[in-house]
Amino acid sequence: MDLLFLDIQMPDISGIRFFHGLEKKPAVIFTTAHPQYAVQGFDLEAIDYLVKPIKFERFMKAVRKADHILFPPDSPSVSEEEASLFVKSGYESVRIRLKDIAYIEALDDYSKFILTGSEKPQVLTLMTLKAISEKLPSGRFMRVHRSYIVPLSKITSVRGKSIRVGNNRIPLGETYADEIHAWMKGGKRDT
Image (cartoon, rainbow, N blue to C red; front, side):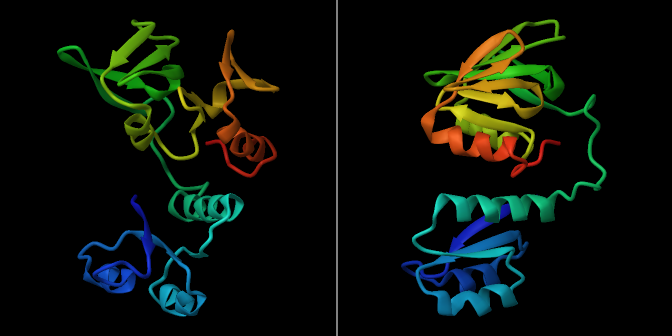
């Protein structure tokens, strides 16, 4: 399911006009510096409407709302056992079961999957963490540092500026600390 963040006032076309022109309409959250456009945004069944300047807490509230609408807690989904993704490693595409991911670490333009319960304990791929995070299911993984993504279900503790995943200590970046703390308080669901 796609989610589009769309500014109402863009240089050549309004965001509302652009949205009307889309053949397949994704879920949308409108942004603008002009609150008077909010009614038009909601007439288009927008999930939310953010007024600039957008505070991080307000942005996260909109994302959680979208997550809840797009992926309702009681909706049928792929089983934990079946959920996987393919990544290119060397000359082959390797299937990685999501349940086997202990964490993902950035190494410049490469990323390394650290796995448990898999034939291979590590898989190196020429993908950035940003590209990988776009392939991972929402609400199950979180970036906790500029160099690390962790599965939320495998976090065993958070202490100061680090997270424990199994026997591994992962650094918790200052930029990501608020989101982790919100998740721990129940602000972000773990599926």
